[in-house]
Image 1 (cartoon, rainbow, N blue to C red):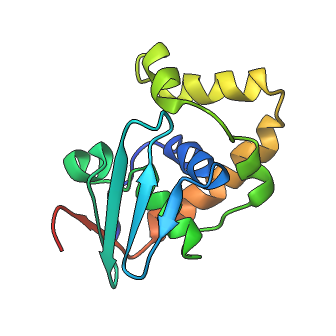
Image 2 (cartoon, rainbow, N blue to C red):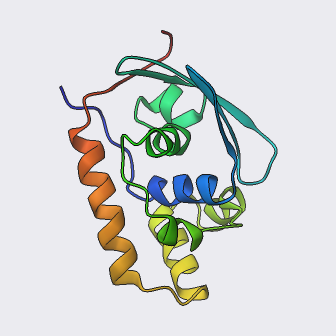
Length: 143
């Protein structure tokens, strides 16, 4: 079974959540604070079913950045700390609004402003994205 997949750029928001230590993992749930600190999301899982109250997971049915971050922290998706550190301290809420939800443009701005190696970063994100596409998980509204 394949999961519905959202924009690849959500991986960068997951990197930020981990680099900023905004993910608090518990036994069968996690809490993830938003990049602007105004929201907190709760992610629960049982076996391969994930439930999250972030907008992407809840309303769109694809793994939002809080779910992706939790999967990385649990070792279910690759997480390169060096790449993650490149995305520390980014207010994605503000940046995504500035770019009118054009997530690719928001990521491009970060890469350019921080003078990051785009090829290396995109290759790592592609690796995570491909693994996410193959992940045997389900996103639901309730466990």
